[in-house]
Amino acid sequence: MEQKYRAPSSFFQYLIAIVAACLVFGIMQGTKDNYGIMMNGIIQHTNISYAAVSFAIGVGQILYGVTQPLFAMIALKKSNTFVLLCGIILMASGLIVTPFCTREWSMFLFFGIVLPTGTGALCLGVVMGAISPIVGEKKAAAASGIIQASAGIGDALMAPMLQHLTAWRGITVSMPIFSIPILLMLPVIAWLSGREKCNKRQSIQASNTEVVLQTESLFRILCGAAHDRTYWCLLIGFSTCGFHMSIIETHLFSQYLSSGIPANLTSFALTVYGITTMIGAVATGFLGQRFKTKNVLASVYGIRIIIAVAFTVLPKSIPFAFIATAALGLTGDSTVPPTTGIISQKVGIAKMAVLYGSLCIGHQIGAFFSAWMGGILVGTSLSYTSLWIADLALSSIASFASFSIKE
Image (tube, rainbow, N blue to C red; front, side, top):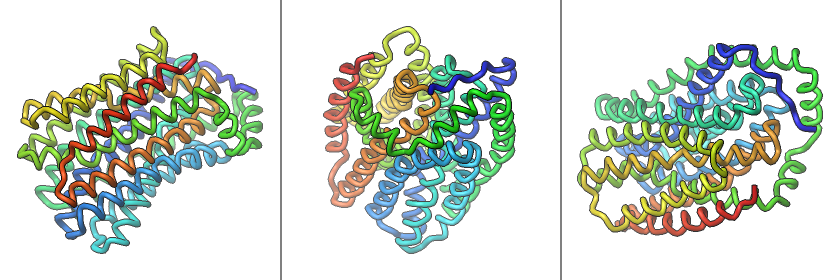
């Protein structure tokens, strides 16, 4: 049975829901996207090797994907806001404790497991699940683009703040301070919880659908998706997307530093990245309403091919850093709105969090290999060029797979 959500009662309610979702998701993503800056601070403070911290980030990337469908099923049985609350507690714990972990095992536990698990609970699928009864199914794709764009706000504000705080007071101050905006999201979650309970009471049909979903296992939902060719095309694309994004999140900061670009300019370039991710995510969200969603998605992967070629053959100067990072931002989060749009067209919003979360497992497996390989390459004094060559090849595969989707 497909869930039919009631229309939002007012534009003001719709607006408040979007702003609340943007705050939660933007702060989470702004933290997650700056692991590279945290990594340099952790290495300087603890003398733990680059390869070990990279491996912890890589495992965390997998957990970010693996935990999403699990949290989505918990959200179906409990509530989306319960899962969001768990995510806030885990993220705050990871940020506060990690700087004081001087051994590899403790650093791995809090930086590689606790913190990433918290980000998985605050993923787009769960956030969208919390506000979908308010925004309605017809506006869900555009809303997902706006919410995904909020990640750019997090990047734009949090990257320079984290870099300057780390340079000024060290990682033992900067990471705990970053837990403050996470904890300030508790009133936002409380408001969303109230709206979620209100919508459950007012929509009998939605409640009946929820009962059906609660009796349907994660295995059955995923088995149904596994027999769909579109799902496999999306999985191929999203896996290569994870490889690409982890280069940015984990290694780009260090790559620019190794090319002689000052840290303050590098963090400012990441601010530009955050701004352009907003533009790219919103743009593909609305382009998906005018053109075939699969063509929009394939075009984004095609642009990434060009960017990978540039990183492979061009010298890494300051102008290059700003232009290339801006281009990375335009294509960074812009795969999400068309991907979620295709999923919602196939299965509806009710199961979107589960299936999107399962796609994120592939996304984060790709991210793990990118983070891990980069750590090995840097540890063995090899360049980053081979990472970009691999990204070029994978983006080509992703573009072809997306074009082949039948809508």
